[in-house]
Length: 382
Image (cartoon, rainbow, N blue to C red; front, side, top):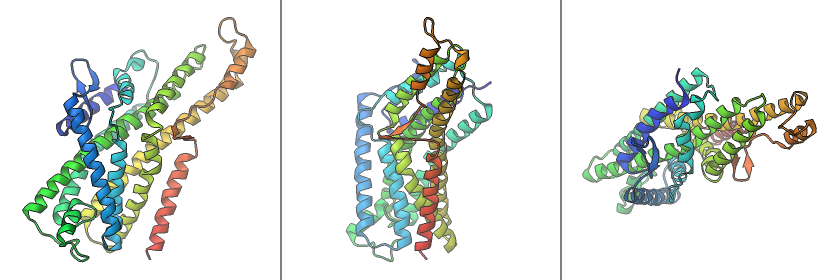
């Protein structure tokens, strides 16, 4: 029977091997130690340089979209692309190569809890997780390819590099944005575009999937396997420690991006798809934005819903402990009154983004916000 670490191990190894080719992550897989380790100083310097280039690129995208008079649909497409790059940038803003998320991932990959039989996971869940990991790995190839092809076919497509370079040459006026002109300059720009998109996609998805999503999923699994017997106190304390570790890794950067930036990408991507489908043309753009929309939708649903499940499951489990106090006489030397006070003092686990936390209604609120804002954009555009 497959276990969580058996599913994740080949995915993580292949992903880090791909990342090592482009020097976009400050971590790599050490086959001798059998775990993730920090890369060398030269690789980390290249990673920092890539982050700086990515930051400059996003800044230039914002300036181009703000200053250049493109048609409305082109600007909206550009806004989607810009927010995708912005989300990837914030995800990868790890100048110090924080090893905290990797410690947690190494612990999951070691699979000590599963080997000892402390946690059990549904087979269907493991299959879905494996498929999602493979699709995310596929996105690291598809998205840069889509961006490169669009950069070749539409050399002045905002907010790609062509729109910035041609603006300086004053060749990119209002009606030139979709002209096809294959030249050496266009090819060189497309190659640079591919490298930036490839690095950003690999690094962004690493932090989104393997640092954020897998940590939340593992905490959800541990919460669903809480011990209800005599070891209930120790079992809940272990999960509380794990919650503290996960919150330290995600509350300031990773989860806030998921809650605040990813829905914006989903809103504009959904609106652009509707507009392009209404015009009945440019299937390449429809394919790229459909890829972006499906990826952010699934990622948002899985990550935020899993964080809400942690709060719901532990809340119900604690209510069960409080309602069955008659069966528990506590730790040796402690009476029923002590245990009653202990369980009353315990709170359901919470995953924080800044000073807020994800509760049972957060996934519905986020998706309702996305649907309402998308419909508002469609109505306003008519």
